[in-house]
Image 1 (spheres, helix red, strand yellow):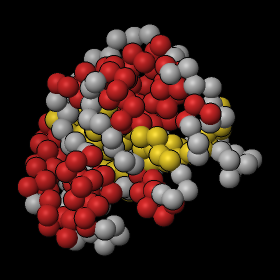
Image 2 (cartoon, one colour):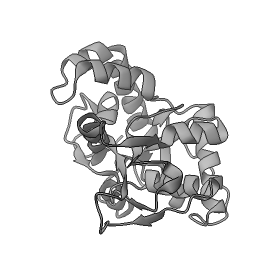
Image 3 (cartoon, helix red, strand yellow):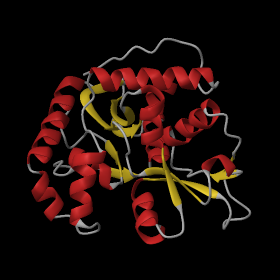
Image 4 (tube, one colour):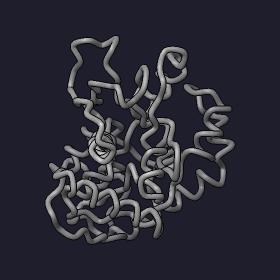
Length: 255
């Protein structure tokens, strides 16, 4: 079995990952989703909590069964900040860290026949809408709620196919020895943190505790069961339809 000290593990550096990584007993690489996806793909990490799209794009990994960051309705932290009607938006600035959310946005715009252009950087920041994810979305919503409306991609996804949407998964590289033992530790850590979520919230120093309580209990889901798997397959089908993925069947290899 691979010991904890030699295991190279990465995790998204957002509040939504706290219940999945808090208390891990050795070093963790904390970074943005796109950076972690690249490190995992290059073999610089053995295990990482990364964008679900990374698995769909490169399904060589084992998934840690029964663990994800998902929503079954509004997620709060994957949103397009915009003024006026979303149907009138001409341009949306993407977050370069957002792998899964950027592709979900492409699918939603295509499915709803919305014509907004997606750009890496806006030339008119005051008028352009923005895709925001993670902690940046929390801060932006709390600081600028009086200026913008927020189009919640989790809510739109629920309306579209009435299934949970899976944003992130623990992925294990295929050469890792005894992935089930690692998966068991990660599942146990998730269970411990959720059983003590009040303590986890009380120790939070960056975000308001009332918000954290609502966010963890109402907006987020941390399992990866049958309905989450259905939701991920539905997303894969949407990505194929919009030519973001090749036409191939996705088989889940879980640990």
